[in-house]
Length: 155
Image (tube, rainbow, N blue to C red; front, top):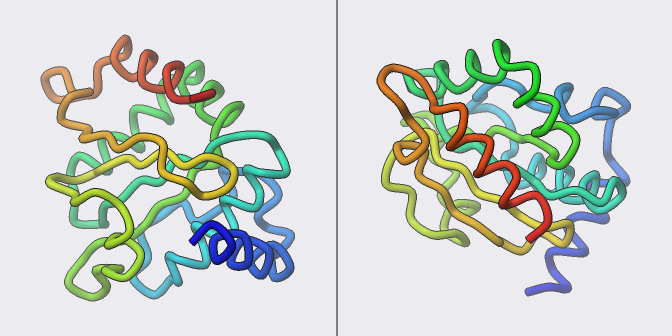
């Protein structure tokens, strides 16, 4: 399995477009037409080069809390900086148009959206996080998100 992950990451790295120069330029929306496995493999390759982890957000355009999470990072510069300094962020669509079942089957079952997975620079899962635990009222809790980002940056 580890060899397969490295081969996928290597293939994705070879095909990596210049637009993927920084984490924020990767797939920043949930697009059912994207190849999520290729996106994750490219993110893993980039993370390995940059000595970071990968932060995979699973959700969809239909997901209200996914939009809240986007707004949270847009309005909290310190959280966005911490995320981008230590993680390569990639979104994986889950919707009736594309459930990305093959990719998601290799990780723990998602029970709510958005869901966050943290991968290391080899593509190995190191943490699975339900985001409901990070909420506060109608937003995400700054301290809980800070703890999540700090705790998982170098596991």
